[in-house]
Amino acid sequence: MRKLDLLAATLVLVGGLNWGLVGVAKFDLVAWIFGGMDFGETNAASRIVYSLVGVAAVYGIASLLRGSESGAWRSSVEHRGTTA
Image (cartoon, rainbow, N blue to C red; front, side, top):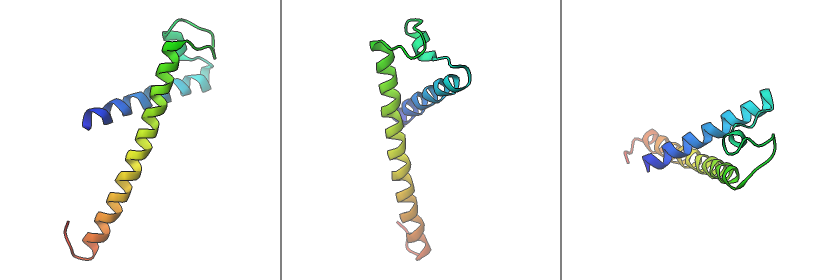
């Protein structure tokens, strides 16, 4: 599971950097890497990357929610003096 977490985090970082470049410089790095296309144009490879970044973001949200739920449960159990 650790490798999947690392892959998801990497993809989310790629997406974040790409959106930062879009916002600051109106430059789409993914489109440029996969064919030197103009801003806003896509091809099959760039759409795959965009899709993977989106899936990684959903995975990251789910991981955060799972972590906060288990953390809340763990702290409430420890607060009562019971160990899990």
